[in-house]
Image 1 (cartoon, helix red, strand yellow):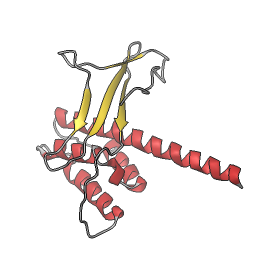
Image 2 (image 1 turned 180 degrees about the horizontal axis):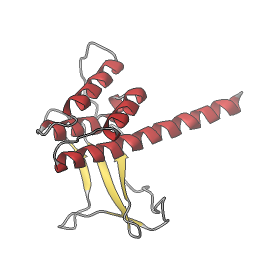
Image 3 (image 1 turned 60 degrees about the vertical axis):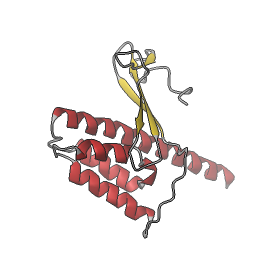
Image 4 (image 1 turned 90 degrees about the vertical axis):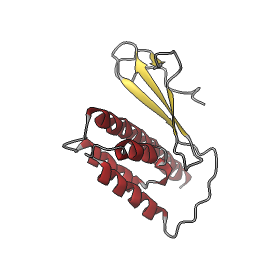
Length: 165
């Protein structure tokens, strides 16, 4: 699944290698929830020279799940944004759960709300406990990566439409 991940660090040009757990298992996280049938994967990489860390997200949906929702995609996106704002700064189980649900459902978040979430997390005065802060900063990396992919795709489609004219 992650065959085409970047091999060189964008900062120093050093070699990127996957981060391993203590038992030498490749650190590929699966965002799961007991009530969802969707699983996203994250691959963590680290530069051997400068130590910069990267997170590669596989946002593709591998399994369809039907949901009857009386509303628009913007409504779901706003609910995820509301959950982020509720959980940011709290010190309960809801932080990890919220970060997992948001990180596993980025395809449901509008680009506008994605930018708002990024701003909220970047400008937070308090993240909660240290382990909560870690969750928020990992989610921030994921959201920024998704935003950059969307903007690159948008730029690519704008370039194509310019050439078609």
